[in-house]
Image (cartoon, rainbow over all chains, first blue to last red; front, side, top):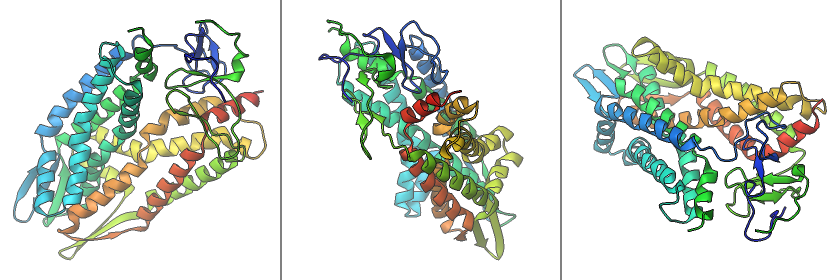
Length: 209
Length: 210
């Protein structure tokens, strides 16, 4: 398999073609529906950035209550406890489970926040005003796409704990409001990442300076 | 830029990530064709892979049944015993807080993965046995591709591990058979996703179209 053009490398758009992003079939740029898989053909989606901003905003808004309200309600014989996400991490550190504390901290705080920033950066970079290395941006995009789902860990932990720890008076664990808003935040941010058109990342570099 | 005459459109493949055009070729056994600009894997063709994919999807479906029905964690504390299955974990959300949450967890760890496996079997099953694909094979494979980021069984497994550590001080925990079924399921799914070359599968579905 070789490149279809000589240097500089030719893109489908420059050649007057459009490729289906689902199955790879190449069409004339005037075609609208992929003949192979029936998917919609868009050479560059001008609305994709707006969509990304909308989902990203929704994700960030949902992330606020996810951190303010308790995610876990624990009641034992002696006391009732309400844990926020950060509170849960601190608890784990007190119990010397540093590794798990690190996983939870990473999955529910570091990843969501850096994802918000990364998505915003990638969209801002597509208009060419921020110069940079497309390869590095593309790697960032890959990482954001790959890692997004892993933030769901905390939601599943809450689900498992509240299913398991139902020992009447001795100890019960129930999910708090934050579990719902955190799950929503993760889903919205995943949508935001999926709405990014990665071809725009590369186009920014191909534009004349 | 000087335009060269382009080969027929069916001989071209454009990188889905960066739009660079390539000549579609068939890489040799266990080879991968990568995009020259961004390095995205374009084609990893292996004709035998179809039957492997179908067999693995079948395996995963059977494991899923085991993973759902057996208890995956058992807990003993202060003389009390509690065991939960995946269904139990889902039900935990339904009585207290919100039914939407229960539905979402159910969707991510059971419904969507099962739908995805069935869609793969529907789309590729007949091909694996040398037959013609069913009429709705292409929308079914598109569905399987769309569901890929939303089936989160492997994340659930890590969640179980974290939950284990959290409760460890409070009670004695035992891993049930379903946990191991889930682990096997995750491994099979990962293997399946690596084997799958989207481009070749679409091409194959296209060729066999009635």
